[in-house]
Length: 448
Image 1 (cartoon, one colour):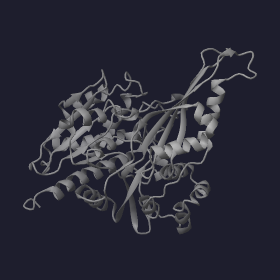
Image 2: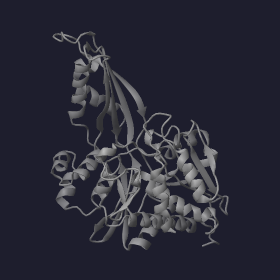
Image 3: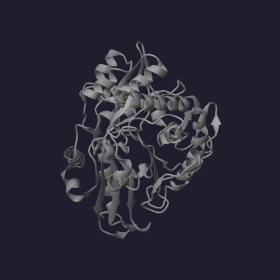
Image 4: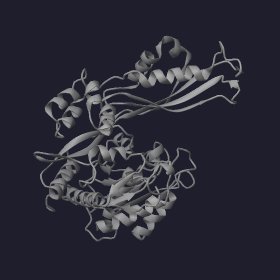
């Protein structure tokens, strides 16, 4: 079974479904065609914009009262700077036991694994589950999902409506004295994206003294927002997570104390892990785009910038506004127009029920003694659309020892993205076992 996953992963990497955020990018239709060839049949294609295709397949269950499970991977990937890579980012070469390529970790490894698992049910190689099993490979996740999962949930709930969901983020586990601690993504931060607009007064670039240069004011604002410390949120779930992954007690104590955590993050040896810890425990503000001016010799009369702002489950839009007031100060805050581009609350699923139990049983079956630990992810996923409908959504995989937790997370949107062949095979086995065990747990008493 898992031997099919690597070739499918390679083909989808080579499809170059690069989503640059514009409607005409993405090209997910290429991987929809790949999946149709892989399954030997087409599914229901939804195309809200030319080329931006999602595809949905369904295997009916044996019991109309049993819960429906959806496997939800995405098909698009983010752009690359090709010259910064050691190997062709769309070559999907296997080198030193790793598949190299954009999307290898985010999330085409899971997309391929889910397809391989689903194919066995679609082709009736395995018996039906009690409830329906849905495979929905979606477009546009990397730009917010409006042309993918967001559209399906809003407009085609008849196709994707479910009770339980498996999607991203999958992360390597931690080896502790009591066995494997396996992170399961159960929550994510909420996007509170903002844009800034600052007016100025045009003039000749040869005479800058005393001018109202919009770019200078905008640069000052961005610097203040980027450098001002942001609010901390130490939640019970964060304490549970950081206490479960084998860190020294003193490190745990400092990483769970709001007054000590910033210094503790600075003291961490692993820069990738430090960034992730900071993101999971703080409001984050990252300037990402800036534009100003029309000509090199003209003082700009307008500056515009975009910021990626994300809130934890204990924060909201008011938290963001308070931070902007504090960072900018009254003079700048009153001059700048702050535009709310996207506000979506942080979201979470409970850690109970048949899918959680199935994941736990699968992990113990494949990895020996294993303990699940709920994990918040700072990134945006399509799970949020489904959680708003009351769906229980998780992300999970199973990795070999070829990459640690922080190393895997650093691959997301980074250079030299790659995933271990053995990890892809283990994740396929993990998902297969989880789906099968979910079926056993949701069957009627007579079926068990």
